[in-house]
Length: 82
Image 1 (cartoon, rainbow, N blue to C red):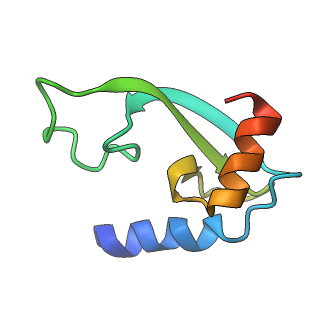
Image 2: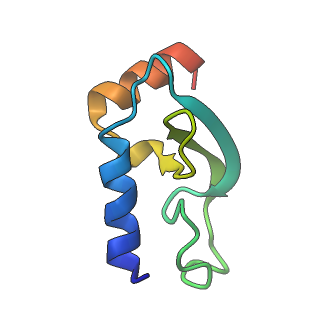
């Protein structure tokens, strides 16, 4: 699947995430490339930190919290103390 289509699929899934029922996880990654699409791009100066993802229960699509609607992102950050 092409990168733009792959990312669009995540953004679309993000619109369906309910912050009350969402599953949340984090990993250490590059917040400039949270899906690790271009790992070589910032190879030497790759800014690493905690990268958060959410998904609807039962979904296999994890969505970077930065791709969620701002109200959903804010609610998840508050609820999970991110």
